[in-house]
Figure 1 (cartoon, rainbow, N blue to C red):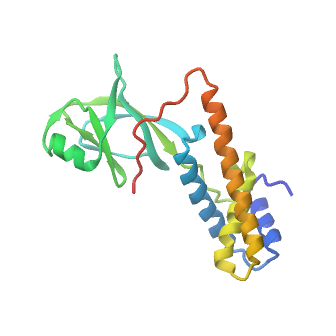
Figure 2: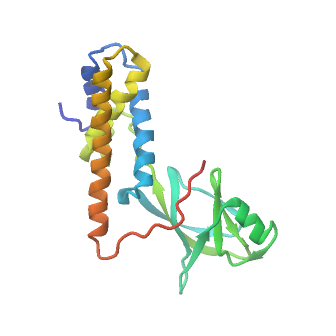
Length: 212
């Protein structure tokens, strides 16, 4: 069976498990796999997860984009461009307090917002490069880059997480699924590293943060 969409993935997972009674549970196994490999790929600086957004900053905070997993670079999109430095929340308060205004030179992430320091004294055009999670599989026809090109991440990740729900599966089989899953993730990371460092201008990591 071609693992080319969500419906076929769910069918394949059920076949591997030898179960026909998990229609309502298999989506949970898929979601757990998505959460896990999204986190692993961000840690590895996966190029295909890097997106950018342009926005105006005229207040202390702005909402983070949908699917945000971590900031890669933030800068004032002017001439010349001015890169903003990532600082921790404690560093931001120690350096700028809560009322200093001016051109932002630093940022931090708190919950679902990006905070600027000093607080903008006007409107600044910013660009942010950030890590965005892969679109989750929701509808039967859905697919994404990972399912299309690295379907074993989905299949063996979901099978491994199914074990904690089903119980009683042969531990050797579970170990095999975990090995297959880890190997699939490592292969994606290795391919990304090869692509990254073969570029003329490799991606430079800057202040990766998250919302937790």
